[in-house]
Amino acid sequence: MENIEENIQIIDSTGIEVFEAQERASIDIQVSTAKKFPRNLTRVRTNSVGIACMNKETAESCRYAKPVGGKNVTGPSVHLARIVCQQYGNIRVQQRIKQITDKTIIAEAVAFDMETNYAVCVEARRSIIDKRGKRYTESVIETNAMAILAIAERNAILKVVPKAIIDTVYEEAFKCANGDLSDNAKLIIARDKAFEFLKNEYSATEEEVVTCLGLKTKDAIKAEHIADLRGYVQALKDKELTADELFKRNKGREVTDTEVINQDEPKQEDKKNKKVQI
Image (cartoon, rainbow, N blue to C red):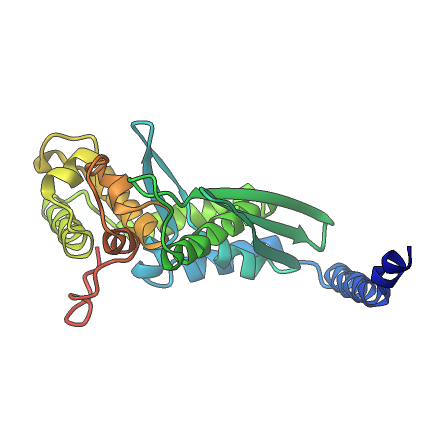
């Protein structure tokens, strides 16, 4: 009995209570400030469009695309979500890695509209198992953790900011990024740049690119396919998917840890010499 009493530890909850009180006070101040200085939705939309369309590179980063179940899934990227969130104001966004299991990373993000007192919490998951069924190395897990945090952040923001604003910015950025491709000569130039970029950065063959678009030949590529190619590039940059996933490369082949890292990181050898923009 004496030994049990000696091992009993009294936990002082004062520190926890103080932290909770400070956190509540901080939120109360932010809510009261938001009520005092409400947002102007027209200005939010105008400013967001202005930033998203400030240059072609920014506009291109606002859209992602990836093949899922034989179809193309496209939508606003985390970059667009952050642009709108910054202009929306009176919003609090937090994200964290909730759990890392043997096979999966689970991220969580919360977006809290201080003005309307509306908040959402979303989860996002990503596998950390390679083609051999082995767990990724720590460096690759860290890279994937950053990517899944960004995805969770994007999904939370898009659930809080009105869809009408998101859609307007998305459409204007799409127009700015793709420009006029009605002229066949311009379409061919844009197509060739896209192929060159994917070849240099992700070792993609012409056949792989054509196949991921659901086409049989390079000549069948139209304006809408150029937009999808740019969306693929953005998804690869943001690590929404890997090059192996996009191009469905040899799932049964043995791969090394170096290859696992490289499928998430674009090649660096050509970046020193030139920057290819598609």
